[in-house]
Amino acid sequence: MGTLLALMNLSSQALQADQTALDVTSNNVANQNTVGYTRESVTFQTSDAVTVGGVVAGGVSTGAAPVSQRDRVLEQRVQQQTQAQAQSSAVETALQQVQSVFGLSSTATSASSTALGTATDGFFSALSLLASNPADTATRQGVLSAANTLASSFNSASSQMAQIASGLDQQVKSDVGQVNTLTKSIASLNGQISSLSSNKDAGVLENQRQAAIAQLSQYIGLDQVSTEGNGISLTTSNGTLLVGGTSSYSLSVTQIGGTTHVLAEPSAQDITSSVTGGQLGGTLYARTQLLPNFNTTLDTMANGIAAQVNTQSTLGVDEYGSTGQSLFTIPSGIAGTSGIISVAINDPLKIAAAATGQGSTGNTNAQWLATLGTANIVGGTTASGYYSSLLGAIGSATVGATTDNAAQQASLTQLTTQRDALSGVSLDQEAANLTQYQRSYQAAAKVFSVVDSIMASALNLGVTTSVA
Figure 1 (cartoon, rainbow, N blue to C red):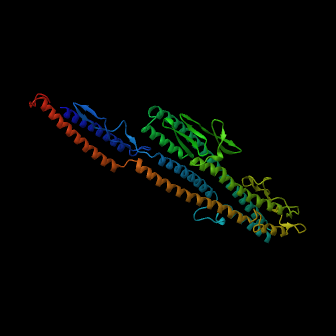
Figure 2: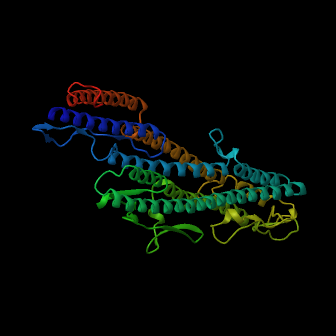
Figure 3: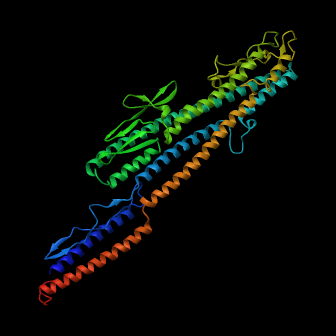
């Protein structure tokens, strides 16, 4: 009987182990499309041996709980690549918006094909016509119209750039809000994991935490460190603490000099310049570095044209015989010129086409004004050349960002595929496991049934109806 009891115990344990394996397989299949789910598996192991009636009986078990199939190093590599890809995507998006301001596209990249480029060429062309016919009022009016078109083009470009900057400021606020929400969630999960599963894989809770960290990686660059109690500490790439144990440290946003800045608790440290990675890092880079550079270039162009035209205009004489006055209104400095440049006069007869000493219908000063179109008046080059350089810089930066984003996305896809090969649920693999565990369960059930039948016969001394 001792041998039969041992055999029954062995088959009973096998049934329990196989049922556990079947349950885990079923759970894997049910969560195939659950975001952040990590495939679980059972590890069959020999149970502690016991002696029954002088016979040593063992068996099989699956341990205390299923084990999540995760590679922490690979998961961190995926998170880091997610941060790089999200940053490059944010930069690319911002640059594409800048491109649209200036009318650039894959098929239109020359200065002459853009609104501001056309307005600049049209203004100097109008001055050339004025030099040919300074006494014609309609020609003079054409100069004022062209000047207004040029000023409006600068104003429009500046306004659209300001709208992009405002949109990026709003994006920073939104990203910071998402970061704060996720860090609070991660800190809370740290506490739950520490109290429930401080020395082993935490299963669903750990899946939730890893999913939250993966989502956080889309917003900001992170460094992750494992701590005691199965916890995780998170800092920004420059070392600013975001999560430590069960505590989270929020970020905040403020305006300094018209620009959005990011501050970190608890001392309100300004970390704007050091935030890298994620959508927040890319947005801050575009807002604090790329846009200001393009705006400065635009302002320099507007100021260079207006200042040179104003200087030459004041050297001439208008049709009333008075000393010429400035054609454009601009600020005393370069900053902000493109946004506020305007035409200072509205009387075409006040355009100073003649030179001092000429009659009011002279054209010498108009000729000098026309030559400014080919003179080095902006940054040591012509206005059109300077503008072409600006468009080239924008186009080059956009192409570079697009290429970088494509490369980052390819790397992220490769790493994600590697991680999913280990941690993701494969229906083919689960189907194979299901077949294996079912057959094992059937075999154990058969053994149990046979032993049960033999023991019943033995107890009933061959009378099968006494005990069933």
